Amino acid sequence: MTDKTIIFEEARPRLLGLAYRLLGSVSDAQDVVQDTYLKWMGQQGALDKPMAWLRRVCTNACLDHLKSAHRRRVDYVGPWIPDHIQTEFSPSAETQTELASSLTTAFLLLLERLTPKERAAYLLHDIFAMSFGEVSDILDMQPAACRKLASRARRFVGESDTRHAPPKDRQEELLAAFQRALSTGDTSQLGKMLRDDSNLRADSGGAVVAARDVIEGRTDVCRFVAQVLQSSWRDMRIDTVEINGGLGLRVRDGASLHATVSFGYDRQGNASHVFIMRNPDKLLGFQRSSAIVWDCHRPYS
Figure 1 (tube, rainbow, N blue to C red):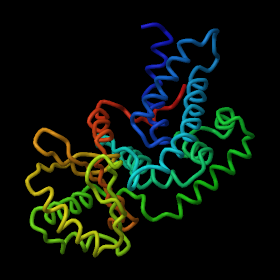
Figure 2 (cartoon, one colour):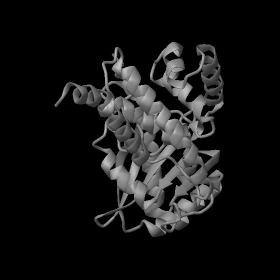
Figure 3 (cartoon, rainbow, N blue to C red):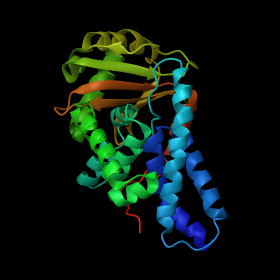
Figure 4 (cartoon, rainbow, N blue to C red):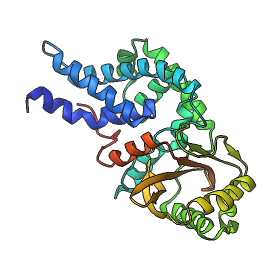
């Protein structure tokens, strides 16, 4: 490999981690990072800070992409949720908590409610640990303006009580209750672990059969799991897998991946969201995502 290729491959996991958190899409993140690679290989002349150049190009490509993504989602059929990705538990509890909190589906959905530049400033500073001087170079804004963007985003995210990652044993308890409801129709234990205002949303993109509306409230979520999912998934193989930094479910119909399920939690460890991915294109991306490192902890040099 050339020196330029080595530099880029060292940066690739972090660029992918940034692009995915900004875009919520595996395929879009990969496309942006590949475009960044092509621009990098075509860049002429020596650079004092190659990593700074790469993150600037990648971030601004994501911001451009978000403009068209917003227009596409206006016509999206049914609820949209960020792509599920397959991750692995870290042996370090501290690192696992940091990874999970910045990758949960609930967190990524919160980011969708920020402006693109608020999202970028918050992620670059709070998640990727860049100084506001570095952020200002990327966003072509004054450091004070970037600080305000990140502050507004941090305040909004901090007000949410639905983006937490409880201990692994609490997640395992919820999965056991959910699977019991799927196999027997008994939702008594599941209901105890759901918030009163919990909701369930299924992303199909209109390509397959799935709930077209968000199902609101503990009673209706339990009824949907017991009456609809229990019947539909009865003969399918369901196993536990790590999704977006937390434990979730993988549902297989024979050799085909039928669905993935992840959860959102509040500070007390109660489930606030059930996220079901049924979109065939996104499920294909999920199967491919297990080989990708979605890094945000390796510092830039």
